[in-house]
Image (tube, rainbow, N blue to C red; front, side):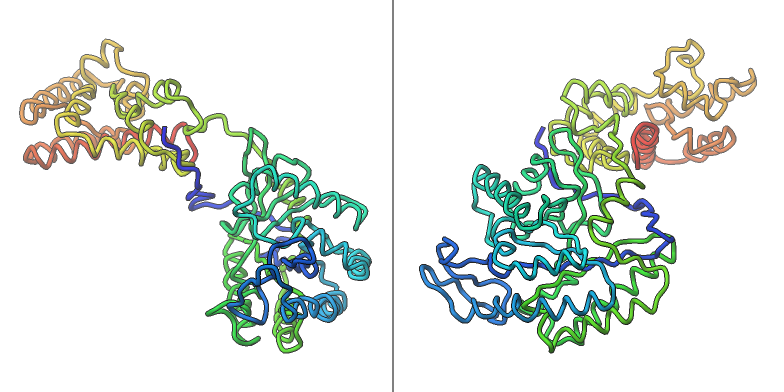
Length: 473
């Protein structure tokens, strides 16, 4: 089976209600990235200077050289920006999460002490603030361990949350395998936390953000002024607050950097935003660890009994080969095609099976129609229907017909099959006995081409209803 690993479904149309404390409409969470002293620098054993997220938009790395201006910009974040933000958050009594680069913590003893005295959560931001995309799994695993070691030395305890940021495709798996983090945030794919399984073990994911993030002060087409940042945060908050009031609360994350938002010309916009949200009730302002603890209590991991894309071929075909009546070849072709997490729901697996049915030749589709029994026909009387067909026909009372009704259905079946060459097919669970009879009579007036397509559509509908009985939406 060609497996497509990306999950394009997530929670789908109906995300869970987070039940934030005090029935809050939105959880607003502030993250302060502490990277200063952990960025690319030949003093740190790196090959070149830093080039990312500074006042020098479009900067390039300088191989084998120190970049004095870049270093100075990062130093501003540690020397001045951090303390300006520390005053703001402590004076407003707002708890925050620090994404702390371990090597940066080791070079900032006063800042670490201030973080701990403020009772802020200090999560790990990796060993060094460098790119990981080309790093081998073994080396990245070693750096994760070193980050945890240094973090523990600097703070007195290991990190319980993780965000690498400049991650690799292996990062989330490797941190999951390490096993000691309550949550990982190296994703941007949802407005709510969710559970992710790796090696049959659950890991909570709390997605981060790159849109409501002051990094856009340092990127092309980003925020040019504090007013733009404030407006964007306000619009985001207002939208999520209203969604929460309408019964669908979400999480809002704001990403910050000491050397960016810590500048006096920018921090005013953050101050205005804090003033704005503190005028609203039903707003919860937690750390990310508090979100993780709440989510684990409110929405603990529940392992699904049936996950279609995790089945082997034989089991998959045995389980889903009868979804299209006596036509296991559809399940075979679906399995041999591309499947993904989006196909693990009733709608998703139906899409995969239906695609194979629609892609088949007219003769193959006709054979699927011919595999269906007559409604209330001889097979039903002889109790030789499949379990699915038996239950479906019983749902409309077709197993309890009077002699007169049975004679009527027999006559309609004969007239229909004589005209079209295949049995009358309808999704019985969508209908009553009376509506089935009405559809029988109405569809007898169709030409064969139109009725063939109508019957095929009903076959697809029957398949969907069968899947909804055994899989989540």
